[in-house]
Length: 302
Image (cartoon, rainbow, N blue to C red):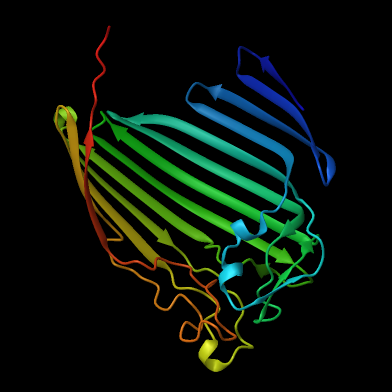
């Protein structure tokens, strides 16, 4: 069951949305999830948004953690998994402005999530086990994203974004980062079109910072890995030529040919202790080229 109401104030300069959802799960019974959102437009080109609410979900263990099925770790269920629950809040600011004929949009997002119950396989306690349990201690996810986009007469479009993600737990006094989550990411996108849009050139660059990896300090020396991954960059290029009835395009993915070497721990002995595919943190395929054709089908009017 779901109920929602929208309030409008001062000619829609203020908009307030409140909602409440109630679900009855066949195992866990009734669950209520309230949420509210507020938008304020001090000027037509400036938007401020804020939201706060709660959410819950049941865990899809193996589909969300496929590496559990292919590694040599013993899967240990320490207890019955309960639904994940969390409170989250966010603030968004969007500003639109112009410089000459260039139209720009600047966006800032800040989000905070506090989990009341969270699930994540414990790979650190024992290198031969993946321990499955509920975590009801302090678990936090903080996110910040800054984005700037610019467009000029559909000829040139530019976009740059920076994302900071701080995902951690405090099982005790120590702050423990969750593995395989890069804290810093940078995205750059550029699109250029010729007059009439007959040619289009696209470039996108993704930069990923370091990620914490599962703990392997208690493994034999040949099965140890660094505590953190290396930062890396992925570059994509594409060119498109438009004709009346079809488009032809070609491009290159991972143009810098970055690859993570030996992403599988203990790959030499796949049936022995220590075999673990959960250490893949970057691209495993190198530079790839592609080409294709898009056909346009015209519908005849009756």
